[in-house]
Amino acid sequence: MDLVLEVADHYVFDDLYAKVLPTTLAANIPAKWQNLLGLNGGFSNSTILQETLNSKNAVKECRKFYGQVPFLFDMTTTSFASLLPRSSILREFLSLWVIVTIFGLLLYLFTASLSYVFVFDKSIFNHPRYLKNQMAMEIKLAVSAIPWMSMLTAPWFVMELNGHSKLYMKIDYENHGVRKLIIEYFTFIFFTDCGVYLAHRWLHWPRVYRALHKPHHKWLVCTPFASHSFHPVDGFLQSISYHIYPLILPLHKVSYLILFTFVNFWTVMIHDGQYLSNNPAVNGTACHTVHHLYFNYNYGQFTTLWDRLGGSYRRPDDSLFDPKLRDSKETWDAQVKEVEHFIKEVEGDDNDRVYENDPNTKKNN
Ligand SMILES: [Zn+2]
Ligand SMILES: [Zn+2]
Figure 1 (cartoon, rainbow, N blue to C red):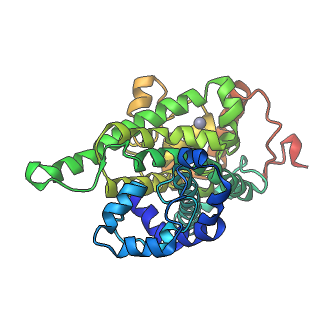
Figure 2 (cartoon, rainbow, N blue to C red):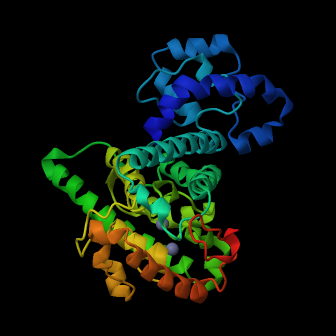
């Protein structure tokens, strides 16, 4: 994240902060508060600043005053022209909140749109448990939740920025660095798969379910846009193990960005209705479809391991993998019957849902 933030600072945030919160404001703030908040009351004289930047010791000076050294670009006078210097924790948090929100929204909309156009099985629109205006509701919930999920995520990136993580950049080729890097991919998946399982299972505890997880289960059958359609705290809790991992175990910085993007892709993929994998070890789309239909099974993310150990694994019906049976009336009728049983068990009533295609539901007219 430090690299991403530096690019953003260089091209956007230095200018923006200098305009919105210029150093001249420091005169109105008592020195005590300036120190406490890490505000920039120092380099307000641009002549002195320019001399410092031109001096041989510019990097040293930056480190002395701002605790950080640029990696990719030289700092300019604009870098020091705001009350909130780059090293201010408040600025780091605000900048990362904006970056994670924009990146999250773009990744969600781009990936889900690609999946919708090229992968998604659109016959699900005819399913008797597809809701009226469902896709619009999925997008609305996701787009309104992502900024708040990002707000909860940003402090974890601030911790990483300030050295509280085992993220590293330099690969130690002499001491099996490449082998360690490859192993990290497996340990990351193993660790976070367990983390998502535990968080997700806790989210199904009745009181927590009603408070946080119910919005994601409004969708009994899904489109790819359901992937990030959560209550913001729910989405954050399910992602918490992705942030704990680099705090306690080594991980290459580029791998982290790749894995973070992969996780988002995977989340979209398990909601797209294409049942490609019938591998008993993989928690693929079919497994997650079973979770949305029948609630109490398949809480995992990548593998079926933790569901098997936790006694919550349910093998997807063979009909899901048979193109003729998958969208047949018999299959859908059987699903509806079981869905109704589980809605009664988990939610009690079904007053929130209005179905698009089912003339038998009381709320459809
Ligand atoms: Zn769930
Ligand atoms: Zn889901």
